[in-house]
Amino acid sequence: MTEFKRALADKLTGLGLSFSDTLLNTCAVYFEKVAEANNHLNLTRITDEAQAAEQHFADAMALCRAFELPKGCRVIDIGTGAGFPGVPLKLLRPDLDMTLLDASGKKTDFIQAALEQMGVSANVVCGRAEELARGALRESFDAAVSRAVAPLPMLLELSVPLLKTGGTLAAWKGETYETELSDAAKALETLGCRLADRFLVGRGAILLILKQKPTPGAYPRRFSKIKSAPL
Ligand code: SAH
Image (tube, rainbow, N blue to C red; front, side, top):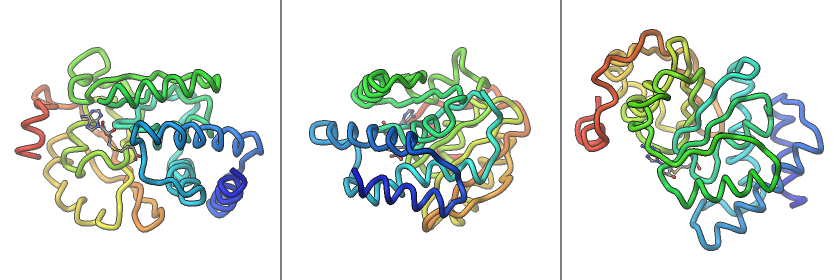
């Protein structure tokens, strides 16, 4: 894990984020668990240490340069997979009230066990975002984070209903983020949102989307609809 820690330290320094040795060690421990479980769970295709340090950890933590998450605020990672970007954010900012959501029980079981072993407290939830948004968690989060889950118009419908009015979605997008943004014009309007800012990371960007109005009762629709007729 020497290579992992060196690469992470370099990237965080490049981002202008301050960090401790303990943080580097904790991230290395979590990545070791991911790499171990990957042999039987198919959690990630990134196995190279330097690449994982950058793409799984530093790119996630870059949010803290792009956006001020208030102390103790409620954050949900939608489609967290093996815990990205939510786990690195929680490790960097232990004060966050972090919920890690994924539809796959195998993935949430892995995260639950790994975090418990490390003594990190987070709410790990197995479920679907569009179903959660029809229950008690509707409009209850200050921020939502998400990477590699769905094209922006679909992602907006999955995530915005979970945000409070005034809350922000941070969406990690690849090179084609400009196209995704123009495709999402109608979804942004229907869901009462606007692009507040963008922060370049790697070849893509973290899009910061502000929710300005309560979500109309008709949304989110069922997943089959979200997918077959995206906003
Ligand atoms: N965010 C992670 C994982 C991306 S893979 C990363 O960047 O590495 C996409 C994940 O989203 C999968 O684990 C899948 O189970 C989950 N997912 C897809 N649709 C979802 C939904 N509607 N609600 C919750 N999780 C969902």
